[in-house]
Length: 524
Image (cartoon, rainbow, N blue to C red; front, side, top):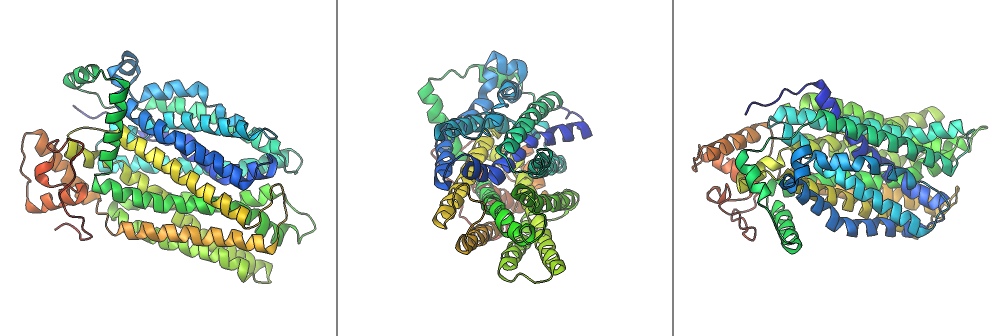
């Protein structure tokens, strides 16, 4: 079947979906802990309990949504609107739930329920959405363009998440207020509804053959068998070697940013605010200082993504990932050392901060882009093992792991801050509390980044190996079951973690395990 033409509108529409994806997560990771502890009367540990509870519920919900998305075309509505697009359509009227999270002065259970509900709505959109690039094309370059569009727009929405509160504070007369966050929540809620509608209108799904549709309609299972098959299938995604390594790189890049974001919010407010605002005749709001620092990082990250979109296909993603790790670590150390070795000159202070933020921003931008670029090819690696297209299962695992990792990171930061002496509602803290903020912002991210660096040395998926993979898939589709060459066989076995003789559904008994040996060497 001839592939539909993909134009600028389609790339842009797909990318807009990350206004919800990265945008909402940027708002949450940057502001929600600060909002809960400053305006809602919650302790940092109570906020952490909210995140942990949401993850327990999500452990069931996100994988189930992925499974339902893969199989929704067995229903009449799924065939009418599309197995992925059906979920987007149903979620649009529920997206204003994001705004309800930002009402101050409520009970602990109010914040728990509103947070959990939005997380479920978020998952019902993002899991189907994340499959669409692989649904729309098999081309390596085009998938990279989709990933680049997504990350670029995601960063722009993250920038909006940082500057909106400062603008709203200014409109309210320059005074910090919980109304700032409620207005921001309302603005983002409307934006989420609009962009999901655009994604629905300007993306499409791979057309199934008649035989595949008949098979989908024949799937009638009890709820028990559905859950049994669901978790077997999800567990099987982790038997794909490239996907396991991809997750390691993904978590290395993203958890480090989650920890950094949550701690940097306090660093910008209390450290930079103390150095610049309180020493001047006219102090700015804490929100403004927080926004200025995060805005700088995100803006530089956007520039890094532009460069990555242009040049990454010419390099191995794993190599570029390692350069990004080094740049981010330099930026983190630069910010931490600024607090310890603050120069007396105001111009020297600004130069020090700018250089640190440049390194941090470039590192973050590339670390964000590479995992979402390589993710688009995971279903291809899985297809040669199973003979099936299971984008939804991978999206479910990705979304769950992403949110679980973020919640764990924010919980860790919240608990560590409380142990470090952070007082809820306070706008000035002791030197000991400041030191604990610096320690959290530095040690946690660097340890996770080093883990991602190590994993990347084992990851060999790139333009060249993906081309070999797709060639071998084409051979299986044509009924050939021997590798085209020993080199191709070695590449496919390295990517999948399975013997060539087990591929294309021969080992689809989901209890089977791969028989290849894990190796750190590149395939021949």
